[in-house]
Amino acid sequence: MMNLTFKQLRYFDALARHQHFGRAADACSISQPALSLQVQELERMFGVPLVERSARKVRLTAIGEDLIKKARQILLAVEELDDLARASNGPLAGRLRLGIIPTVAPYLLPEIIAALSNRYPELELEFRESVTRSLVDDLLEARLDVAIVALPISEPTLTEFALFAEDFVLVRPSEDAGKPVPSPKLLQTMRLLLLEEGHCFRDQALSFCQFAKAQPRHLMEGSSLSTLVQMVGAGMGVTLIPEIALSLETRSADVALARFPRPAPSRTIGMVWRKTNPLSDQLMQIGEVVRAAGQQKRDTVCNHY
Image (cartoon, rainbow, N blue to C red; front, side, top):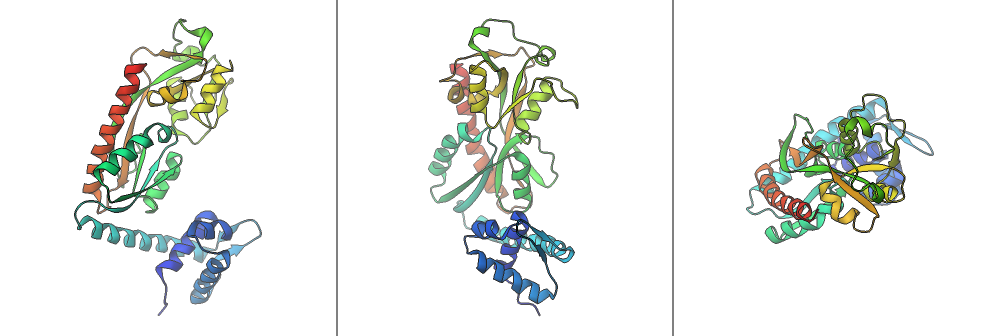
């Protein structure tokens, strides 16, 4: 009988995700030789290579692909057993791994940390900022407990909990202040500044501007909302940002803000977690705390602008 350990499965999962021994070792906080030794031990147990090694990248063999599917099922079950024990011990305590998208993180994290620390003093919060698809993948594979994203996700294995809705605001050069607000059709003819591909906010903005499959001819990209607003201030075009970002991103930029007529473009921010997570009841309570913090933040910003 094989003497597989959870540690070996976690190391192999990290190697499968990072496709590089060094990066996988860093993610596991061990040395590269130690991780390599554990993978070699797995290969000895199975009697076949599990990975194809090269100088730049590691690829799983066919047997390795089969193993990682089973390994992740086991790791998920172990995580849920741990969560089941935590759920039976009263108030939520210990580690909570929370993912959050970049168009929310800088503007809401301070409020989330303060609210949750006050309500759950024994909670150890760990945050990861990334795009939606990456966060959802981490949720499904139990590398995160919960994530804050734009809804809907439409993933049948995840619970969706709405936090607050917010409008998108047009940001344009200061000399355009007072001009009529452009229609979605007119925005198609303007130099539009958007986030790079992979951000759901980019897709939402393109949808409002009624772009079909073809990309706008005058599109320019930035890596963050802050970059986009500064580009607008430099006269490079116009952009859309969510209400929650207004106070932070426009305070030092020479730009003008304009609200769209109803129905204005908007998004709903929410929390998502696995339906099978034994901590679902506690996560619902955490959602209520985060909802109150988010709505208060949004109301404060909207009352100022």
